[in-house]
Each structure stands twice: as C-alpha cells, then as structure tokens.
Image (cartoon, rainbow, N blue to C red; front, side, top):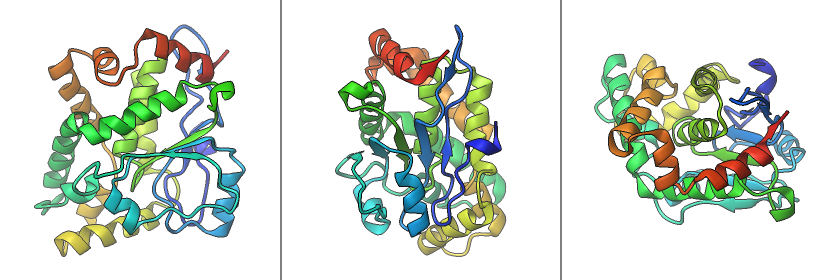
Length: 263
C-alpha cells in the first residue's frame, strides 16, 4: 500500500496518491483521483506525459504569487485542468524556508516547524485556498469534478494540512492519516528533494547544516499534532473548524464521501 501509491517522476518530488485508506462506517477512499506533490518547475517531458495521463480536472496550488513566479509549474501542451490558487501571498515564505530562520540545529528546527504548524490554521490566504480545495473535491464529474492534484512548494506543509483535514472529513482513522503525512519522509528521491530545498533555504538564511536542512524538508508527528492542538484550542475540534471556518458542513461532507469513497 505504501510504495504503490508513489508516482516516481524525474523532476517532481513527493508525487503520490493519498486515497486507498479505510473510512469509518465502511468503504475506502478512492484510488487514482486524489494526488499530492511538490512544485513542478523541473518536470521533465516524461513527467508531464505521466501527469497528463491522470486526467486531472483540478490543480489546487497553495503557493503564493512570489513562489509561483519563482517556480513556475511546467504543463503539458494539452493541459486543461482548472488551477485554483490565491492571487497574493499565502505565506511570507514557503513554510520550510520560513522555519529555517534561526534554526541553528536539529532540535531548534523541529521546534520552529511545530510553531509554524500551529500558525498555519490561522493564515487566511491558506484558508482561502483550503475552501477552494474542499469545494472542488465535493463536485461530482457532472459538475466538473474528478481527479485532482493538491500541491505547494515542497508538498508537505500546506499540502499536508489540507490532506489531513480531508482525511478527517472522510472518516479516515487518525493513524492512517498520520501514515500518509509521514510518507513525505520516504516517498521518491529523498536526497534530491532535500538538495532542492537546501538551495532555497541557504539562499535566504546562509550556511545551515545538512542535518537541519533534512529536518526542514521532512515532517514529524509533532507537526501535525501541533496543528490539531492549535485548532482544538481555538475552535474546540477539527469538526468545528471544518464547519465554521472552511464551510465543510454535513451536506458538503456527504458530497465528499459520495464522490471520494467507494465500497
């Protein structure tokens, strides 16, 4: 289940299927319709052909304007998916780059990533894209819905929060949701992804150790737990956050389950 959900690509990191998990009440999240990844600026022609074969109807891009300008996504000639994004900045910097400020060692980096995840649920531009994400996924094929890709710069922080919230809305067990979150640490060519992230981090903050870079480019159970704790502290529960902040009420959850869960 772990390796067969990863789509090995040459220039796009962390590209994988986040369906297939069992949901409460019976059934499983569909495979082949929910994809997540990092940015696509280095996508090869072969990568573009493989992505085109997925038949994407929506691409949800959590990056801000400056990230999209610095790392423009390559697209196939026949690319026809609707791209959903916020026309401004979703973060001052990509989260792993932001957390690198002052991250002089591994433990400091872990702490800064936890603090960053605690702030993510309060960033309105991120929440704006999150609402677009849930709206798109709640549509059936007759409404323009279908296969989708959600991504940010590294495909792990903003994307990771979105995927975890969708899994919760669908009834995926928290252990399985965490398993999917942690796949970032083993999916694809890890060394190449870390090296790519190191360029942006060091360009902004100077000489940061390889071990610290690896922490910034990875994920940890503590990060998702920090996001959940921050949400529960302000809104009482993930369910309340989904309903009151993201507009994912029972009607929308039912639509998500209808289109994304199979027996």
